[in-house]
Length: 219
Image (tube, rainbow, N blue to C red; front, side):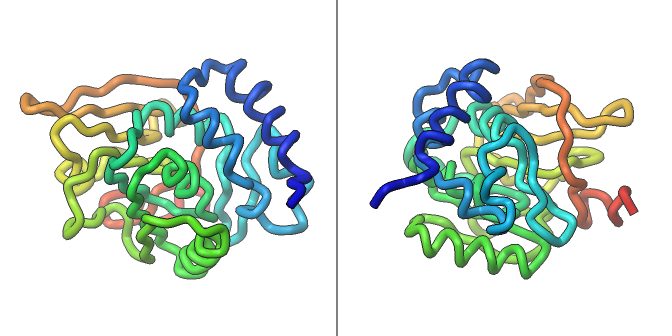
C-alpha cells in the first residue's frame, strides 16, 4: 500500500531532527517508520509532520517531533529495555519506544486519551505496550524497576516514587520548572546515587498528580 506521508516523514527527519543534532541512527529510523498522522485529530493531518506541537484534545498536546526525539535519544533505549512513560497523550512516544524494541508501560491521567491511544496503537499493531489510566506521579510500582523513565510533562520536581522505580544504571528524562520556564534533565542512577545532567529549555503541559502540580497552573 502506498504511504502518502513517507516523503514528509523523511523530510521531517532530515530537516528537524538531523539538523538539530539527533545522531542515533536507530532513533532516526524509528521516526521514519511511525505514522505520526495517525496520532493526531484527522482535521490536523496536513500538519502532522510540521515543526511544532499539536493539540490532541483535553487541553493536551502531541509534542514537537524534535522534542520527542531528544527525549528518546537521551533515554538511550536498547532492545529489551523496560520503559515507563508518564503521559501517554495520543500514544506517539509509545510507538517510537516500541519501534526501538522496548517493552513499554505507559500511564495517562485522562481516561479518554488513554483509551484513544490504546485503540490507535492496537490498530497499528504495536505490541509490548501496557497502558492504564491513573496518577502517573506514582509510577507503576508492581512492574518496577525500569531501565528508563520518560516524563512527558513539566514537573515542579522529580516525583520520588519515579526515582525509586528507576533501575540501577537506568535513565530518567524529565522537563523541570526552572526560572519561570522548563529545562530538560537527564537523571542517571548508579549504586552511589543519582546524577543530573542539564539539557535544553523546553515547553510541556504540566505534570498533575500527587507528586506533581496539585492543579493545572495554567488555569
